[in-house]
Figure 1 (cartoon, rainbow, N blue to C red):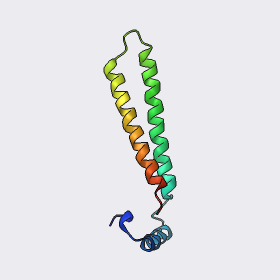
Figure 2 (cartoon, rainbow, N blue to C red; figure 1 turned 60 degrees about the vertical axis):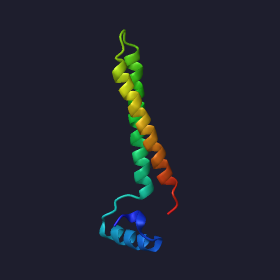
Figure 3 (spheres, helix red, strand yellow; figure 1 turned 30 degrees about the vertical axis):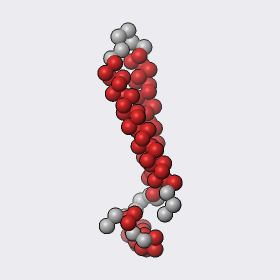
Figure 4 (tube, rainbow, N blue to C red; figure 1 turned 180 degrees about the horizontal axis):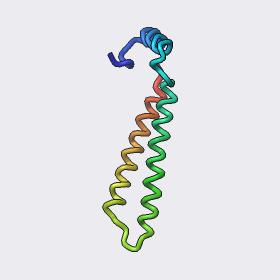
Length: 89
């Protein structure tokens, strides 16, 4: 059963039991923040690659386009993760 489908009281009871058994290692917010940070690192890396490639005499337009698409995908993912982070359980 997916955790977000449970009632609030059931989630608390299950998460407490899981915590005591050692299954859960970090909180939901911390996990989401780590994912957001990872996406931001990918964006920064691709922006740096775009900058370096654009300085070459003949920049590879296809590679730059791929990196730009990946940046847009990561930005959309960050938006979804932030929405999940702000969700009130």
